[in-house]
Length: 137
Image (cartoon, rainbow, N blue to C red; front, side, top):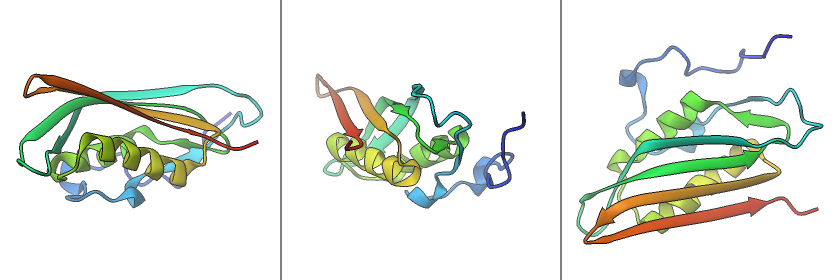
């Protein structure tokens, strides 16, 4: 049993090849070999950074993606590169979590997905944001 990797273009690339702006086209998928089964995939990074749109100060946090795939699975390196592209993006934490959810749902059409951002305290307040998607029917 071999996994189909023929459509993946990011594995083996270096940081110099990464995009300098957020672009959901960087997200890659591969065929789910078990579409008849509900199972959960969890991917997380504690190295997420974006910029406050008002002050320009960095917001650091953890992003967790939890989903039940349908026909396609998210390729992890492309997700990493996509998330790292937010480092120079001025955006509120609530916006970034919802944007990530929208981009991932558009790319892989999961049965269910939840994106959670746990952002470190700045100004004495830590913020957690969770956004969820569930396919109708």
